[in-house]
Length: 372
Image (tube, rainbow, N blue to C red):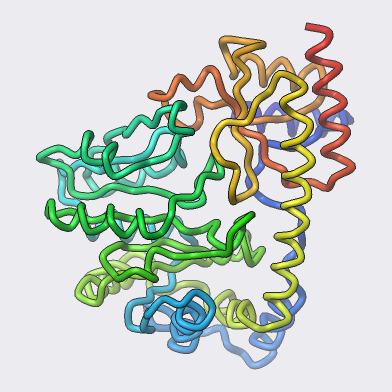
């Protein structure tokens, strides 16, 4: 956040800043979603909905799992939430009692540990190995599971590496966690943004896992703050009671807008944007190794590359700060994503701007590294 604040200050002062630090693509919200929101406003659909969300939206989400992803999900398993962050808050509080441990992948999304702490739990880092390309395995999970562990969380695709975990392997992890009296929570918010393989879900293999998802990434609805979770039926009533107390309900207009997310026209737009992101990804994967910036992790999904900068620095935060000041390129240091994976060696690049801007970023990076 310190680097983002500085980047914004430099931009306000007239500098041309290339923003490769922000986890939000440059695409506008799809037109069918905007039109659905306008129609809802014209109809006056602005009153509270049930705490678990509009029944029509819960059914639309469940139908998408069944028809597009081949997962036997019912509407009763779906709870619509104020963003994926709202879903995380609900899940952590429903599953954790004070003092319970939650295993969180390192590197991984930095806010997860705050949701665990908010629920009274103890976030326990699960350091992943670069030798394994920072991938979680069932063996690694078992190695770190302790007597106080009640849940483990993994993302697929993940932030910051873009790694995917095979859904059959995720299902095996979910079964193993259940055998220990715990739960596997799978973050699938980048589910639709996959490259080289179709989108998939752990729910295709059963309902042992709790799944988090969002309209933000694949459907381009970041500012609408709308997500969902899918849980075993026996867990849903507790989640719904929590939602009633904390949020009352998700934003009504956002829910009506999201009904259009599963329309054929919107899905076509989302697919075209996925292809654009894949082209950006390919451009960077071809160019970065020649700059002495190898990519670690699979980069198989999301819109991030995790780069090893150890050839150039032993402090990726200082590197990012200096690069911003001298070259006007904003990147995210590895320290954001955990402390147990030698984060000073790494930084994250978000390919969330168009190809011309990415080429300019590569040029500036090359000039900066040559001058060091």
